[in-house]
Length: 305
Length: 305
Image (cartoon, rainbow over all chains, first blue to last red; front, top):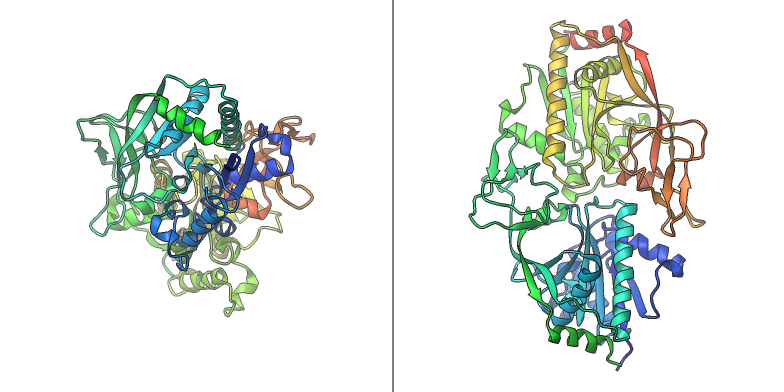
């Protein structure tokens, strides 16, 4: 078996630059973050998009890790080619194999620091539980959304997205970078503890399970004709109940939330999701028991050598 | 003489989209804003950049209104061509002549709502004084900066920039749009009052006069190696004194403001100014007497017919 190696990816979206800045600072000053002797590959996900100051060149790289793309290397789509390349370089069977991937993102939504988990892979849930136990971060479980697939971390045996906001696209912010650094430090520390079999798993995990996304109200021509209501803006993770203000039209008309069942919205008014027809996503908060098979999966992955 | 006509420009920077959205909403519902019978041309400054989701295609349009560009129409620079085109269409000698230009911008800095005036043209100062008197907005007087020239409004006999933030690039925000709308309404109201010679000029004008801009600290290779300090972030318009925290390095080192003379910083950490090597600009607050010749200049311009 190969030795444990982590893949840290920043700039998967070229205009989310705070993680890239952290990597560069860390590269210049290796003692900035204690790696606990763990082997790490740091990579900029989409350097071309970074150079262009854009989220992506042809398509969202973080939706480009699709099964079919790995068979059609001659795709003219820049990001599909890059996805293939990253797998070839750092995938679990790659030239420089990594078993765990951490993908650093920022958002214009007021999400604070949080983790995103895709689906219910045991090792992901176990690792997320350790970080939540230590830092108290909320976890957004993204699943059952056929319109949103092909996420980077899904191509590694274990992988989490770190999502921090609010920060504008293309904007460096000291607080966002410090928050990113804190999570990296904690992750490395937790992985080190599992490697040493010092196991302090919590009994329970709080997750915010994805239910659905909603679009902005649109006119007959498909143009957005109402905005996120000021009372809803920046209220990520806060309960949305029937008759709460949801959208706002400039003529003063308010569009209220009319469903009977309350939800917890996340990614409220994320700039990059406008093109995906997502004004916000709705979640349910759930308390899950941390299962032994989750722990076992993570322990096996980290201690496979 | 031709009849008074206002030029309203949104999206001079293609990723500042809130003004564009306001224009579209206003176009669909003409009663949204009372134009007081004043003739108005609404135009998107840089529609190509808007389409591309970028600030500009080749160069900043709001630095492209340069004397030399008007003689070299065959320039390969998209924005210089567009600057020429706007002058040709809406300049004071243009096909559809406008005398006053208002250019709508947003910033990632926490500037609130403010006006930017370029140089000390009498009509600009008079119009700014009316809006400040009514809404209390701060005014940033930009002058004596040879590195920053070619602003759009300078090509019209009278012109102001409306600058509102914080809002991320490419992000619609109901509050920012409402703030923009309030200023448009007030501007039209004030111009209407001057047209009717109902003159309520204030005695004094508070201006924040541009002194200089400062860059981020950089390493030997020219890379930014310190960020705006969290205590300075979002503190636009607030006095910066000797020994106040200015920049912050990830290793915890703090770079303090070391000049003896205090300044009032503006445009702190505006995302688009990183490429212009501007971390923030320093101003001095001054109280100016509103002079009769300023008033006369605006009255003559508005009542020239």
